[in-house]
Length: 226
Image 1: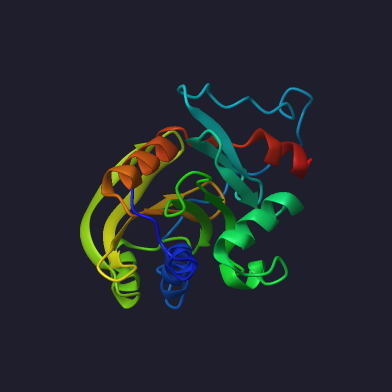
Image 2: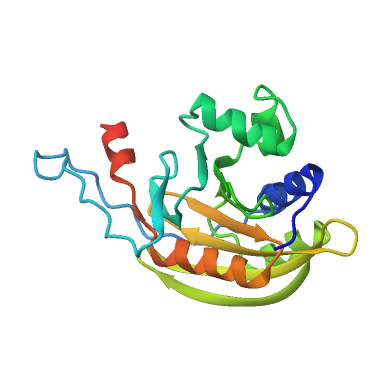
């Protein structure tokens, strides 16, 4: 596995932010069905159902503001921007060579969660807010604007619904290509974008596949809301 410089790692992490911002400049708002009235929670309804068990080697990452959870390899550092743990924030900031105070600005206001591999400094996963109705063409345009080359796209069925996934490469250190996959996921309230990047196509594909296959409602978010 190839490694990358702190500047490159920050650029890889920022790819999802750039795509979200570019898509957000002219969001495509689709007609949505009328919302279902929210009834007062009963004692049974207030008890969130636990997400399914994960395959061996994975553990759950949580993004409370998004209300979702998904599987990542064990040992990864996960920073939930809604409730950042100081020690985790310090490690992530050090990997990116920015101060803890500057980390929110470096990641951007749309970032909900960032996860980095403790063993491989080129691999990362970010979760960002996304305008509802962002189209495949929006994704292509935004990626191209960041200097990425589109490789493929697919529709993937997740436990929470369909996700539009686009694969791309972009220049990293010198002759090294970074491989990324961006998944736009429509949720009951809003939409999120899950971006996986690494310097190896197989690693990126595996991380994305596992995350989407294990996507679930986050009971921690439900507890936090109530």
